Image: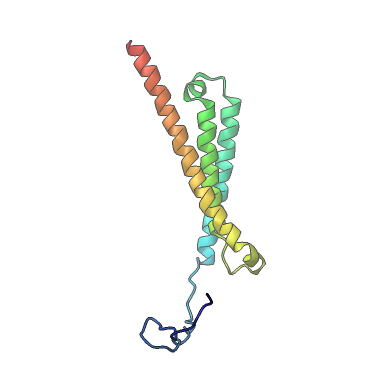
Length: 143
């Protein structure tokens, strides 16, 4: 068999004619003000610097009792996730008003989402591991 056109196509409105094409609507794009972008940039950069300084402090004082008890790997993990979240804030400052970034905006949007959720996953995984280790230590001390 071959295909046979027995009837015209019926559209959703019940007629045989194609509906009107959609008209474009002008949409006002609201972006952050320059002042808010500048404040966010400054706070993010200060936060990244603080994370770096704290990571150096953990490395320098890693033999101290307080740092050993707090587990330097756990502290590094928390500092890494803080840095990742601050990096997401920096990515949020990029928008379509920057003409040299227009080709990369799709990739930047994906990077924001993946970085945000990767930071959350790493942070809460580290927290659960820390709680599990505390639970094991406390349950073994009771026995």
